[in-house]
Length: 123
Picture 1 (cartoon, rainbow, N blue to C red):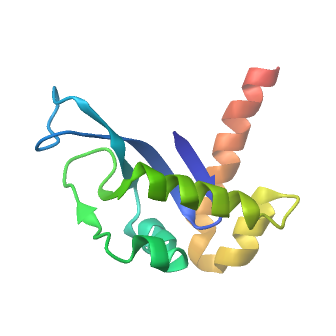
Picture 2 (picture 1 turned 180 degrees about the vertical axis):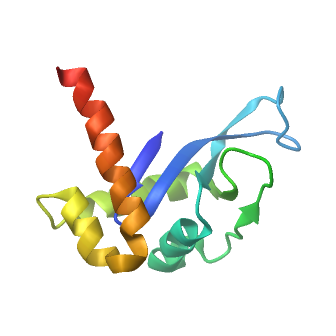
Picture 3 (picture 1 turned 90 degrees about the horizontal axis):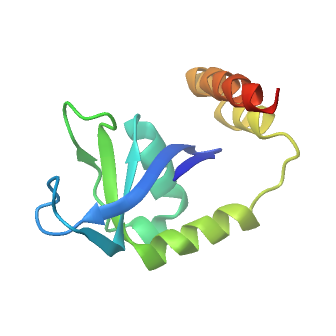
């Protein structure tokens, strides 16, 4: 699952059992939330501190998503519900630009790029 939020961009997948290496079975109860920027996971962890306080951000050098946290699926489900409950905008990209300010310019530009690419599906 890709998730674009006002806090950042995340790729959430089931973690793997054991040491987490390729070929290990999927752990249906554990979610690996990945991000390309540490600041995106820090923002998520800060906003949902009561749910993610014990989650350490791990850096994975040489992977497509350099930063990861691991959470129980039940915790991830609670975060998704809360994200939907706190929606208070009618334009996502504008909300991100206002909330993140200049520090989030690269993220906002990336959102516009993704919007443009996905818009091609409609044509």
